[in-house]
Structure formats: C-alpha cells, structure tokens
Image (cartoon, rainbow, N blue to C red; front, side, top):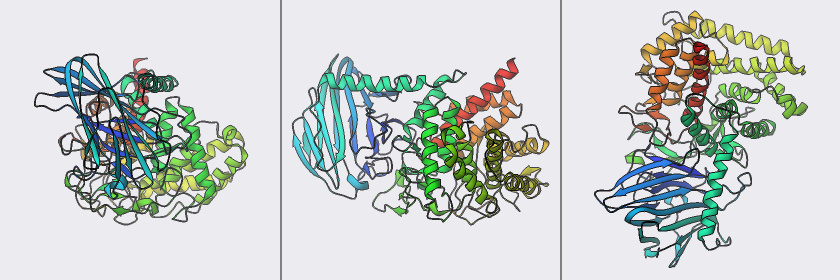
Length: 607
C-alpha cells in the first residue's frame, strides 16, 4: 500500500445510500456507513496509520495495475498484471431497494485470475467513528464480526480464503490459479442486527448480474446521443451515485477533508446537500432525460421550503444533511493527520449558517426547469413558490458571503444578484404560462431593479467587465453563467468584453481559476488550483458566444484531466493533479452542461 495515493487515483462504487473509494492498488480507503454523512469506517485517505482500510492487493516489485469500469455501470475492476499471471478484483455495491433507507449495506469484492497464478493479500482494518472508537473481533475461518459503537461489520469470504487474526483486525493470503475465484463481502448494519446469510457462488453471481443490469437499465432512460457519449454517461452515473435515493438529495461529494492545497487549511466536509449544487445537478440530469431524479429532488426541496426550519432564520439555508436536518456543526478531527499532512481535518460544515442569496435563484430554477410544476406540485406547491418570491422582493438587496463561501466578510456579490434575478425571471414566466396567481408587478419590479443595479454597480468601466462584487475590480468565473440563465445575450458587447477579460486573467491553458484570492482576500491562508466547474462553464460560455472552435478545444483539453476512470475532483493542481473532495458533483454537472451546449452549437454550425 502507498501511504497516500493521489486523490484522483480512485474509482467510486456505491448503492445510492452510501459509497466507497477504491484506489488503483485495490484499497478501500474511504467508506462511511450507513449514509454518506455517517462517521467513517475506513478513512486511510485521511490518515494512513489510524484511519482504517479494506485492502485486496497483489504485492511485488513487478506488479502493474489497471483500473476501469465495466461499460455504463458502477462496477469497478482493478486488474493486477504480474510476471506469473493476471488477476482482478471486481468491486460493486448491490443496489437493493434504494428508495428505502436502511442500515444494512454490502460491499462485494470478487477476486479472480484470468492467466497463470496470482497471490492476493487481504487486510481488513475497520476504524469506527472516524477512528475514534475501539471495536471487538469475533473471528471464524471464513467470517469475522467487528463490533463497533452502534454498528456491526461482518466480513464473509468464499473460496480458498482463511482469515487470520491480526490484533483486532484480520488478514489472509489468497492464492488463485487460472479460472479460480474467491470473494470477500463486507456487510455493515446496526448493532444487534441479524448476521448476513452465508455466501454462495450462485448468490454472488446474482448480485453481480443484478447490479450490472440496474445500471444498464437506468442509463437507457437517458436521451443523450451526442459526441461525448462515454464521458457524459460516466458523469451521469457519478451524479446518480452521489444522490441519496431515500430522500432524493444529492451530496456535493462523498469525502471530507481532502485538501484544495496540499498541506493547507482549505479542507472541508462536502458530504451534504447544497441547495445550489443539488439544483444544478438535477438540471444536468433533467437535460439528459432523467426526470425521476429531478422530481425526487423537487420534493425534497419543497419540503425544506415548507418546513422553514433553518439555523439562519431564512426560508432556505445553503446546505442541509441529506435527511433535511439543518444542523451541521463543524468540528476538527485533530487525531487524524490529514491527507499528506493537510490539516485540520474537518467534519460538519460551518458555512451552513452563511447567507448566500444565490441559492434562491438556483432553487427556483430547479423547481421551474421544466414546464410541469403546476401539474406535479399542484396549487399548494405554487403557493409555496410564490410565497418565497414575495419574500425575496424585499430581501434580495443585501450583502452576503457569495457562492464561494468566503470567510472574509459579506459583500454585494454580483453573482448573488444574478441568481436573484433568475428566480424572479423564472417565476414570472411560470405564472404567465400557467395563469397562476402572482404579484407580477412586484416580481417584475424586483427583477428589473436587479438588472439595472448589476449593470450600474456590477459593471466596471475600467475593466470593461462585470466584477465579483460592487466596488471591486476583481473578476469572478461564477459570472460565466450570465448568458446561460439569460441575464445577458451571449453576443452582448458587455458580455464579450467580460469574457475577454476572464480569458486574459483567469484562464490558464483552457483551465479556469474561480478568482484571484490575492486581489480579493477570502479570509483563508494559501492558494488553490483551477476550479473544474469553472473550466466547464467557460466552455459553455464560449459555445454560446459563437467561439465554437475554441470551446471545443477547451472542452477536449479539459477532458484530458479526468482520472483514469473518467472522474473529477473539485480542482486541478499546478501539475495537473486532482485536488479537493472527490468525486465532485459540481464538476460532473458542469461537464454535462458544457457537452449539451457545445453539441447544440456544433450542430447549428454544421447545418
């Protein structure tokens, strides 16, 4: 085992309630259960020595590894090529009734040899509650029971595998010849639950076939037939894997504490549902034809709006737990050294109580993305939406912390105003389309006031560009969404000059920085890499503005930064490495949006 494999050197498996990262060495070094936002069982990615892992590796100096997904599935294959043979570990999590919340989850790991002879080493070292709790071990030759606080983990094996005690952990040496198989299945459940049934070859095959079939059937519901089928499908599967099916709430990423700068303090917990990220994720899936996910999220968002229970006193707060709980107290795990020494490791998220006005725009945009709200949500749903917009008419004009959750004080952020404009614009359109009761005069006055204000105070005559916040000269890549939401026409002179300014200052070889922290202090030490969301928003903006050749080049160039199985973290570092929490919904939703916009413009150009 490497102490800390690169962040991007992982594949993702999951069952729509939780998920695990598997390194290309065959090590599960991040897994939380029973939910995405539960305490970790394996967290070696944040502390190699203390965090815990579940490894099935092949040791030796001449071992080469390859990792790939079975096409259009979330079934991950890690292949080991050795002088004596070729072996594989096939990882997947069966998707059993995903809409029903359960404490029982299975991680299936199948070992097989396709040529010669291969010797696998198995090591299972669970560390409950972020490695803060001890556990007990009950060991038998083909099973192990790890008892932790409130949680049990059962490891079962099939084939020529004999588990041996290693203190309170287990290990095994598994030697297989051509055509032979073995398996290790980890079942996590609540303390005192019934142990899992014994493994059988037939049962394992059924699990594999069912999991593979689930993903094939799900993907067939999509309608994307464009130029980047493989990458768009992989991004769609990733967004689905990041969605908690029992509530329909997507998480921003499955990890916590992975750094935006190695050795720095920008290490946040992203295992929660941001209204902004989730809304944009559902728009991306809806654009591909996946309507059920969009409807589920609308129900979740509508419930948050109706509940009105927030820590800020606002109608919505910027993030929640996946069950809608608004309390996300932030704490540091000082006993963990952090990924390659990047400390502190944080769980919870103190930004939950920030004021970010843009969430109302993204939320309303998600609720009105398709003209079916009146049919799906009914009259009561419309009253909730119109009540929110009535409230926003007198609350949009306030300083806030902005989209990037800076901790340097509130400002009049241009992007926040842009998205408030979007909220009113979509509400007005829907009221007209479905003849619904609305304060159209008040909404229209607020919408127009925002436009005039942004054009007057958000525009810098000196920079010839829209700027990050009023009174500044700082550029901000979030404003790349301006033409996408219809605030400005993509060929408007003000927009084209803004795009030119961003290309000169924020773009580096088609990769885009969010903003310049040196010019706009964000209250945090250190720097960061290019922000992959913004790089794909840049492609979208270029395509809409008629710069199609440059857009296609930037898109194809950005795709080369995907990891070996098509996944992206939050940022790209100075030497092309993935940085930040992984995989990142923001990046994959923007990839989908960029592909759709670019396909549309390329089709128009070719016609």
